[in-house]
Image (tube, one colour):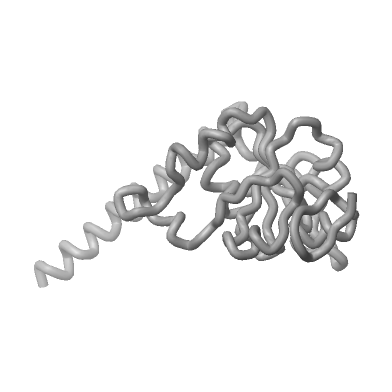
Length: 180
């Protein structure tokens, strides 16, 4: 019977500790200038659109990647274009002047396990003022962006990838068409 009594006492003490901690957290939140307004209406993050029936998952302004349109990408002077598709896809055709930096799931591993990006691969990216990544529309540019955003200057992902670039008639090297 002693075991049940000890359990009940321990449960009561744990409950009191949780209630006190929750009360302190709520009080701190209410008096903090950075606290969350518990009675406020959610309006999205900055100028990020709210979800709607037409767009249930709008792309946030900040986060993994804030895409740049093809038109804006073409207007950026002196940007380094980086193709994260496979080396084979790059050889078959790529945006004129782009650098190949293939993404692979292996890049997600820690450096001591053979993952990450080598310094010599990142040197041209670090020297550029603006780096624009693109992919084949599979999300690999966004993943690459999330890995490199702390190490590089202005880093953006071209919305729609290589297909959007081709549709817009952007300069192209190799097979597969493009524009000029």
